[in-house]
Structure formats: structure tokens, C-alpha cells
Amino acid sequence: MPSTLLHILAASTLAIACARSDAASNDNAKKSATPTPATLTTDAAPAAKAQDSISARADSGRVLGNAKAPLWVIEASDFQCPYCKQWHDANFQKLVDTYVKTGKVRLAFLNMPLSMHQHAVPAAEAAMCASVQGKFWPMHEALFASQKDWEVLPDPSATFASLAGKTGVNMPAWQRCVKDHLTLPMIQADHDRVVAAHVNSTPTFFVGDKILEGADVNLGAAIDSALAKSGKKPGN
Image 1 (cartoon, rainbow, N blue to C red):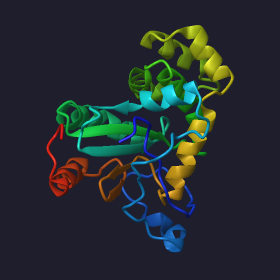
Image 2: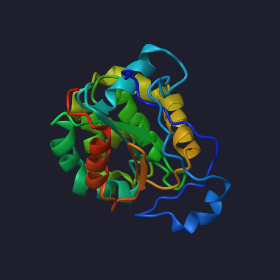
Image 3: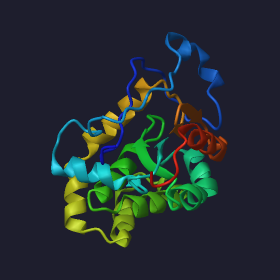
């Protein structure tokens, strides 16, 4: 398994909508293709095309868990999506405690900023520029915790900078990364790959051969099923 984030392979593009638990309203958009389980590959290139140190560090920074974990869980999310926050607040820590810390799962985050959310891309850039410095997950936590505050601001850049500072990043380097949009190509590549995998809502999770959409998914059951199918024990 490479240290870089798995990329998503598929051909078709669908409309995107932030949804709670299913995508029934988008059935027409799904006529072109049915999602196939094999949308993740283990011999993937990094999420961004450029093989530069910024992309490599940002990519590895948004992966959590033991490299020997028998199962990958990929989360496609939007920092401004209320349902992503709903899932995060109710389930993220439980996922980490039950599956990631126990070595059963390796978790990776894919950016899927939705056009309906005006601050979704800047929030993703704030997180990925923190990821360059190994601070993605603290910034991830800070952005969801304060979503209700910054989503209504005309310009949340000062708030994002304040949050980044509290994570302990080197601020001049983080500010240059944000100002020069150094992680934007990676964020766009994330978005394009998720859409190409026939995903039309956030949050969406890739677990083994399953694609699960919405804040109310039974992720634990899907993980347990995938682990049972793999026949592997943590650390193998």
C-alpha cells in the first residue's frame, strides 16, 4: 500500500448535492452509469498531479492510522456541508477510537467542496495547507467545530488563520501556502475523482466494496463486514 492517498477511478460525471442520507433526488443523473465497487486502487498516484514536496506532504498528512491496517476507509467531505459536520460530531471520534486506534482501519480524507458552499474551497485550502505541516487533523477538527461561525462571514480568512495558528503551524509558511493556492490543484483533483466515482452527495464513504452516502450511514457495520471479508487481522 503506498503512503500517498488512494485515488478514485471512474469515467462518468454527476451533479453534486449536499444530502443527508441518500441521493434519491438525483436518480436521473445516475442513469449514465452505476457505481462499481472497484473505484479505489492500491497502486495510485498522489491526489495531485505534481510530484512536489508540498503535494506529497499535504497528501500524507490527511491519512490517519497504521500503515499495516487491513482496511482503508475513504471519507469524501466538505468542511461547510452541515451534514458532514453532523456526521463528524456524532461519529468521527467513535470511528477513530474503535477502528483507527485499534489498527483495524486506515482513514483518509478526500476534499469534495460543493459549489453551493461559498467558503468550502478556502476551508479546504486552509486544511490542506495545515496538512503540509502535519496539522491536517487538528485543523479538520477546528473547522468543523467552528463551522457555524465562519460559514456566515463575508470573508472567513482571518478566522481560518486564527484556527491554523492554534494548531501550531508555522504561520508564515501556512499563509504563503494559502495565498499562493499551493494545494488547490490537489483539492480540485480530489473533487474530480470523487465525482468520477459517481458520488453525488457529502459525506460519502468508501469502505471495501461499498460506497455509502450520507450522515446517517451505518459505517461500523460496513467496516465490520469488510474486515470479515478480508479475513485479515490488524497488523497483518
